[in-house]
Length: 270
Image 1 (cartoon, rainbow, N blue to C red):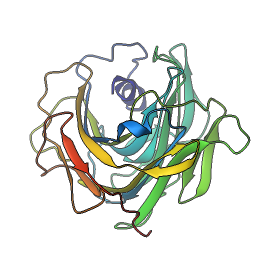
Image 2 (image 1 turned 90 degrees about the vertical axis):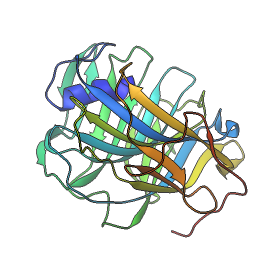
Image 3 (image 1 turned 60 degrees about the vertical axis):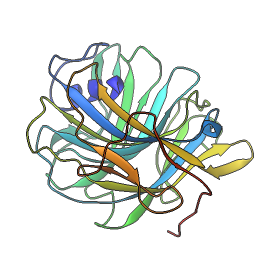
């Protein structure tokens, strides 16, 4: 998504807080959208299996769950591999970045939870938070990332394995499109040999007025943003029953919008 690309430009040391990112920066995304029943949901959740590997400094590998909201905002939450000097919490207001937390040099294999929020469709204001060292869990472990309305009735709560690790005062609002489960790579220019993941998702679910629901179908989502002409080399597939999904390198890439899976959802044990 273009919104993610703008944040990449800032967090990698570039000044680009307009609707058009700095020339040459791109983000490739692959994953799935939930079923139509996830429209108008007020929360989203997924278990992601942590895969720790070495990422190249200046690149961003990010595995997340999120949704576009009816009030024009967008929110996502997951874990990232993002080497280099990073501000761990901040905001950009009218294009001006403000770091509100510590700045750390993140190592090439240090996986951390990360959330991002855009309060409106104009993309010049946004907020972010990055967790402490190795906060995405031990390699090979499943961890559940949830975006839910705050218990106080105002704002969003970011929860990792059922425990709130951060929150914001904006929202909540209902989703305007199906929820998304995405693996993403951002970089200055496409290079031979770039890899992403692969990463595994399961227990893909969303919150409606009558409670949480597992997705009953998944459609492929493949994006190159901004409007770039790069070939997206990454794929997505359902590996096994119940919507267990794998995305990233070395996986066949279906056409955008193709049905990946439809059937009885399965709630895998944690």
